[in-house]
Image (cartoon, rainbow, N blue to C red; front, top):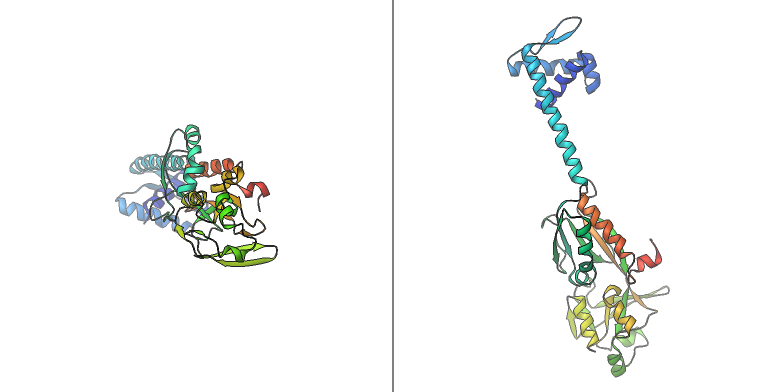
Length: 307
């Protein structure tokens, strides 16, 4: 028999004054309530209640047991309340994973303010482009960049959207010419990004038209910022998210090619294991980043509004 259930039933019988009232309170039958108390008395080796046709009263050992049960159940209530408060509290170590370039360019500047707002939080941040196993590796939260969040076992919230831009340096375009069509691009030098799911086939869209473009990268890299630096050196054409190259486009250090064609946008997602019992520290960070990113010029999600 569940000892907690025994104590709960015993307390209900004592406080309601009858087996019938206790059974109604606990939503069990009178016979079940009576059997629980009988089994409890057998296990304890003593009678807890004096029973008459009119009323119930506690025996001496019943009185002592009642006081103990009262104390134990009060402690359980306090413990459960503390857990609830701790879950909502913004406190503890927050283990976070984020892509290297995005983490350096767009997260690093925000940690100071977040930690000042929440002095009881510690950040354990890992920057790498590999997709981590949140549960298996013990992460509270990951920032992921993808066309859409595909892992149905995880909960995600879109924080921003980054436009994918095809571009090259003015020096490269002056030397090799500016492509006028997608077909011409296939004859140019291309700097490839290793983590594109379709490999060397890039998909571009225009009005009601989708085209797949086969490229042959002279340089292939698993880091977006390195692709950017290679393009700035005039090594070829890149397709990179606006959060990496927006400043270069604004300054003219990179020039957008065929703006009427665009690659699939990338969402910036906060991903975490569960929505149920979400800790206060995770909720606080997700809300904080969503608020910060909505002001970024590269965030096309903020410019267009929620979709």
